[in-house]
Length: 273
Image (tube, rainbow, N blue to C red):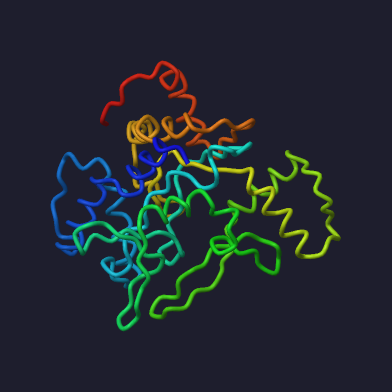
């Protein structure tokens, strides 16, 4: 992976401002007046509040780290650009913790009397790149759907749950790419799974706002925040992508893309909202 891309991923996944906001929320149990300079306060606060609504401890759960992209973006033939990742409190994905000084990651919530494995930034980068090609991240269920593991609150167990967006991407890409690998709908399961991995290996997806937000809840974010994240993150990620097809998913991603396309090529300086 390109070292400049790795640096950009680190800036998104373990953003210094996000870490500071999350740390202050945990220490104050949510009772704090936000600093006017905290650009990402709403999206970070959102996760904290969602945990509280479900009776979960944000400090144990961890902040679901921002996602720079999913898939091998440097090699993908098809790039999907959406508005923002969904936030599912129990999903099995990188969770940022800041209670020991330096940031570290877990994949599930920390539980009493259960040793939770801890991971570093390099491991998270590989997760982002290999998520569709590695079965341990995206197991295929009995219905031949791509899934992600979901944590069961109060235990150390997980179960797979289908991800509708990924399966829509797969069907779209399969029809577009027409990969001739000997696969047919009557092929045995092993052949079908190889075909599915082959198709998904040619896909990547990125979001305008890389921070997880619960479905149907945009927190009243204004256009300038979406545009800021486009210039700060998305436009830079696109410099490493050479897809044959770009798919804009939803009206928000489409509108941000059209608003910022001229500045993407003129390389205007990013301005804070």
